[in-house]
Length: 322
Image (tube, rainbow, N blue to C red; front, side):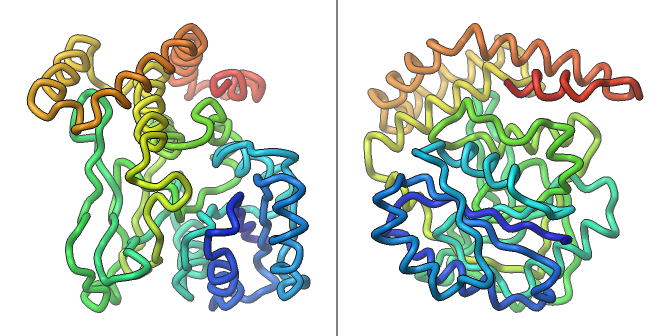
């Protein structure tokens, strides 16, 4: 098995059937990939929604019960435990795959042994507008800019294009070699229920010398923030809590002074993105994990310095992501 596609899901409001239809109709031969759905929604969600829906995909899709909501990273990690593929692909349940996505991702990963992750262009599902073509950390305090965001989609202009190198990627559609996943320790479950675990994975890939590649000729679609909703207070609290955790856990290349100055300037000039209360609540929530986060940061720092040593032990890698 060359590819394992893993889809965590928890809400019946998400168009999972359309996502599965798009993945079952790939140009890649069906014997080369498997599809694994991880139920984060509990037993009732499985009986009322997933089991009837997956009856139409019984020969193509495996259902794994998480026993509760493990969040995005936890669902992905559980799926990997049951996966047999050499490469791992991860999909949000509210995404639609380009028919050529898996085939071109496989070809790229086979030809680029230094690739830590590959992703593709992402457009809005309901209109021809770009969500992102990769992302970059544009502020020392952990805010990112999604390349191409809000621009009209012109997929035809990208046909025949090859790949671009990225700094970061969005986690709705992406793939990685299993050996890289194991080396990094996978997505961290400390960001539960979500946000910034994909940014951490990309950063750590690059810190170990791997590349992040954008497949410019592949376009997938996605409903932005369908699970928590972009206008909900909970979304912004979780988002900012994860942002602060990302800064605590990782060596971003910026000093503490630069990070604090950037945060203060953002509050002063933009009123914390016009969500000051949710931002403050997210910050306070992240402080509860500060000791564990700083320990993970210290372990990862040692891991980077030891990356060239052939005797690096597997248990050290899993500790670095704890």
